[in-house]
Every structure is written in C-alpha cells, then in structure tokens.
Amino acid sequence: MANHSQFGFQDASSPIMEELVEFHDHALMVALAICSLVLYLLALMLMEKLSSNTVDAQEVELVWTILPAIVLILLALPSLQILYMMDEIDEPDLTLKAIGHQWYWTYEYTDFKDLVFDSYMIPTTELPLGHFRLLEVDHRVIIPMESPIRIIVTASDVLHSWAIPTLGVKTDAIPGRLNQTSFITTRPGIFYGQCSEICGANHSYMPIVVESTPLTHFESWSSLLSS
Amino acid sequence: QSFKLLGFLDVKSVPCARESVLYGSLGSLVVGLGHFLATSKVRRSCDFAVGGFICTMLGYWFYCRYNLAQHRIRQRMLKEGMRNKILFEGSSLDPERKQTGNERSNS
Image 1 (tube, each protein chain N blue to C red):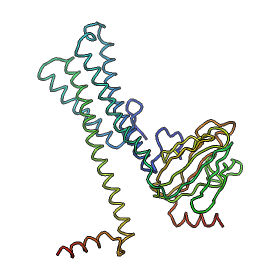
Image 2 (spheres, rainbow over the protein chains, first blue to last red):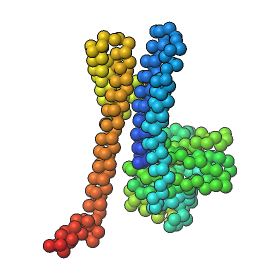
Image 3 (cartoon, each protein chain N blue to C red):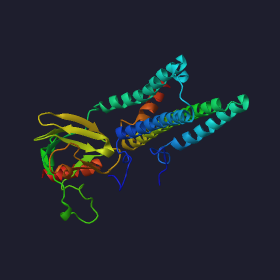
Image 4 (cartoon, rainbow over the protein chains, first blue to last red):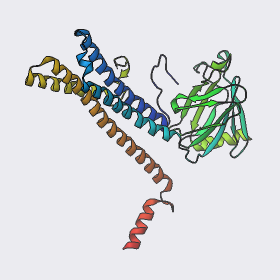
C-alpha cells in the first residue's frame, strides 16, 4: 500500500508493473531532456529581442520536425512493447472471478471446487489496532505466488473497477460484460487496492486485498474454505 | 529524502538517473568550454553546451538502462535455474542428467 504522502509508484510486485515503472522512468528522463531544451530556449528568447530571422530559416523547420519524431519513436517503442506484453495470456494456473456490487466484491474460485465468498471492508470502528483504515477486508483474495493467475471481472449493478497498483492491474467491471486480465505475483505478501470507478455513495469503501502465499498454504486455505 | 530535478525526476530513487545527469553536466561543460576555447563565441558555445548536456545525458541513460535490463534478465534466469535445479535434481526431468546421458551416448 502507499505510504503517507507518497507521490510515486508503489514497489512493483509483478513483472508487468516492473516494466511499467521502468517505462515511466524512461519517459521522465525524456521529459527532463525536453524541459531542459525548452527552458534554455525560453531563457534565450527572454534575453534577446524577438525577430523573424530565427523562425523563418529552413534548418529550424527541419529540426523541429525531426526532433519530435525522434522523441515519439523513443516513447512509442517501449510503450507498444509493454502493451503487447500485457495482452499475453500464458496458460494460467488459476482462474478466478471478481464481481463488483454496491458496495463489496464477490470472488469465485470455480476451477476445482465451488468457492464463493463476499469481501466487505472492515469498518473503522471494528478495525483491530495496527490495521489499515479503509483498506482491510473481512475475506481476502488468496492466490498462489509465482503462478499466472487469470481474473475475470464483471459487475452486477453499476460500473466498478478492480485495481491493485502494486501488481499493475486495473480492470473495469461492467454489468453484462466479462473483462479478463492476468498477472503473476513475484513475491508473497498482502497487496491492497481500491475500487477505481465511481459507483455510488460508498465507492471509497469497497477495497480489494490480495494475499499472495506459497502454493502449500493456498491449498490448505482452499481445502479449509471448501470444507 | 528525495531530490527531484525540475520538480519531477527523483534522481536518488531512479536507477541510472543520477549518473546520467552528472555525466550530462560533465559532457555539457566539456563541449561548451571546448567550443568556446576553439571559437571564442559565447552564444554558440552555450548552444553546444545545452546540446552536449542533452546528448550525453540521454546517451549514458540508454547505455545504463540497457545494461540494467540485461542484468535483470540474467537475474531472472538465474532464479529460475536455481528453482528448477532444486525441484528436479535427481529426477528424470533433471536437465544435467539428460546432458550427461547425451555425452555418454556420444562417446
């Protein structure tokens, strides 16, 4: 989860999010180069009288056509690479469904046994000491770590969105439509997210918590729940 | 504590950023000063200094990020290899066993 007054990304917990963070750093470096150039040109213009000689030259026309094209290529190539990487579906080990309601999530694990449970936010008045306000839920989504997971997201009433920043996942939950996304968690842990599509009065009070555990713990949890 | 250049690039937490900016500054100084010493033209030397800064900074950035990406891929392959070795050692799926089997059949 985000720390107090955190401005940047959370630490990545999936390979896709690692790539997204890398691309973001790359884009910021390109932005720094452009800003430096613009600042310098601004300073030049402020120090000199304006004339039409500079901007009428053929050479400057060439420069301010080719340079933006190069910048666009520098940004587009890694961006497209990540876009196609996100669309790869690699034979998932587990498929689970997330259904958005007003104002809670329902999760279904129907691969092997019919496991269905609701996930409500724990109200602040009932929150144990040391737990995170507006982020904790009564039933977490437990998944095995380092396994490709497919998640199918939909909603029963209005638009919602299933999002977990540290995994680089954000998928809209649309009534009457099934949206699919997949991810792999690179490490065990508890990952927090919140509903990311305005859905009514309690939109801010339907968080998502994913707990990534080793496979043996996941198996004992699922057999406990199904019994 | 973070140090953000122009208010948005955190040079302390972004890998390769600090070195890129420092090498860029050095490149800018070398190119700008060199041009001035050669031509004694201040305005043109400043243009070259800014160009040198951008080119050196971006050049080192791409070089450093490429090396970092290769390092990360090698790290992932190593991690995968170590896990597979632990999982399959001694079993019929052990790749080392298959390799020694092939060597024996070749000899």
